[in-house]
Length: 227
Image (tube, rainbow, N blue to C red):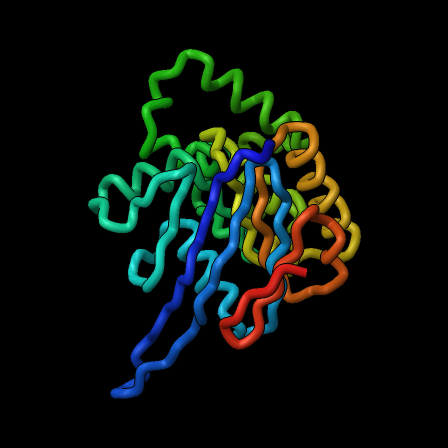
């Protein structure tokens, strides 16, 4: 029996362009279960980034319903939403979004500022194990400028995983990487999904990644279809 984690029902999103109301998402419905690896594909401007902003609780202004683990949070306060997002969602971006004046260790610890783990006595051990599993423990005290692109993305992945989130949302995670680092990062995602049982939602415009997940969605002009 599948364990449903995300359910969107008839979700639409509009923006105002001057006085004109533009529809970005058109009656989107989807379900994602725990341990799914969902790939969402679409060209630039298709609506895929808007969709993941909603899935990641970065955008609460939409029509329709969004249930997370069987509960709607659409009318909850900003504080509740922020706590929910920090506890359950790990974000990975194309350009890494690392703080260049912070070390690897300090970058990975950023999400802990908003959690209750800062007093956890096992935190240092967990952090070291995480960095070791990603092959960057020896870079713990290095700065992002001293790392390769692949290593920087691994730091971003560690930062996304440090709070043990329910879901990883990866937005074009290999867009800034060469082919070798791209392959390594994608293999890492597969391991996180299959071995660590992490639910992954990956957004990409690159159809070479269509077969990496067990679910494939395509967005075109705001309309979502599962392939």
